[in-house]
Length: 259
Figure: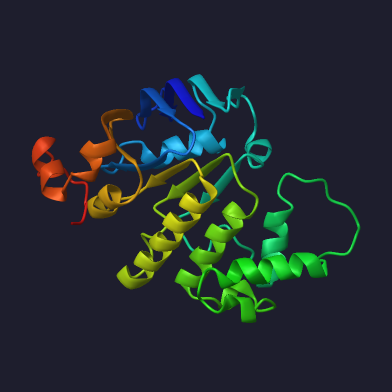
């Protein structure tokens, strides 16, 4: 499904601020993998997602999705293959537009645009039904401006928008980090339901070790721009936070990973 091979990325090369963010990264995801990604600040987690999305070009290496070489493709052309949810609830939506208007934009991702009527009755019914699955009452507020929603409501909507047209790959960059614990748990449960229902191949970056262990079928840890731990299957199911801390000797790491 996804193959990163020999990826290198250095920022501010040749200056005193030079920083090698990704250092020979190799990573392969199979179809339907739900991979959680942990690591310290500066380990390369978010940079990896941004390289996949085309926010930054790679220095060397190749990125393939479903056998197609994305490496030289600009960000806007990759968007048709990808769904993204960011850490900041203010990103990923248009605050001054209504809920149904945001969903209409997401529904047309990768499609040709024309001058026909903006939202058909059939589409409005689809949006209503999809919103109802969130259990937040947003289906009764479809004309409300998105800027009026709470952070949790907005992240749930962004998640729905990212998966409304089934993406080849879903990228979640600490998408619950800015939410309170109760709301974060709600959004994570919704994430799990949508990923399982639509069999989505997913990369989820998190700072929470408990969440990294609980969700997904595979866990990877990054350090200094490389994958240093890759756990899956039964080993992951039987893993605890304490096991992970002890096994990989990261008690003193400044990862701010919560139990």
